[in-house]
Amino acid sequence: MIDISLKQLEVFVAVAEYNSFTKAAEALYLSQSTVSSHIKNLEAVLDTILFYRAAHKKMELTDDGRRIYSIVKEILERCETLQDCLHQKDKTPLLTVAASTVPAQYLLPRLLAEFSSSTPDCHFLLKRGDSLRVHEMLSAGEAQIGFVGLKMDEKKFSYFPILRDKLVLITQNSEKFRNLPKNCGQQLLLEHSVIAREEDSGTWQMTTAWLCRHNILPNSLHLVARMETPEAIRRSVAQGMGVSVMSSMAVEEDLAAGKLLSFELGEETLWRQIYVVSPRIGRGPCSMVDKFHAFLEDWAKSHNR
View 1 (cartoon, rainbow, N blue to C red):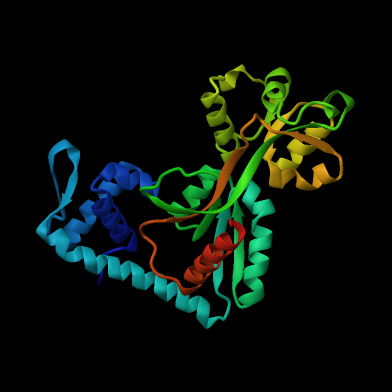
View 2 (view 1 turned 45 degrees about the vertical axis):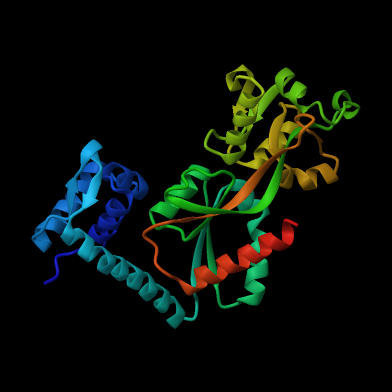
């Protein structure tokens, strides 16, 4: 009877590639004690020592550890291939995509529609969360590809930019704002009540980074509310509750309809990148994921000239 679990093998590869129990635990969103337990159990089953502790708590593979590393990697990749083959058997390949709020609502519908027109046999499951939650889903294997508005860890994840997104300050379309210069967003942000996204959102992270670059403390803003959805913020701003920094993609229709006004935050336009993100380790080959990646790269080239 085989007493080795796939989770033990996944943990072994993570520790080997990060050379650290702590970093492997962070990458897999496990406790350090759980990682240590998986390694100890695997060593007991194989009757060997897989790691030895070098200076500064750095973990290194033993000779036996190095011998089995490539075998374990192949096992994990074959398991991913097996999963993909089962989807192909049902003729309904499923791609699970995780996205933060703005790309989920305003970019993904367009991308998925275009990809589906050329690949009608692919089915999608779209999951939404803030940027932190998207990274958690990818690391836990709950999604295969993610879309986020900021990079969080380039050691654990690979990123490529797919689209530039402009951040603007939005206000109610009222008389007191209509004749103001278009680059007075910073002044309006400091003078009026502010409605913000949740703290882990890419929009808020970019806003706070911009504030710090201009020597403005984020807690100096008159923050009246935090809201998770762009729709709630847009409606609250339109009702005169306050101003907000938002993605230009999220307010495009309201601006065209005259429901809101937008202002640049300063002389220099504030841009952020929307990134396609995927985990660097623990995921084997998948033909449909690779096909979707290739489509996204081609799409990015054609839309970022």
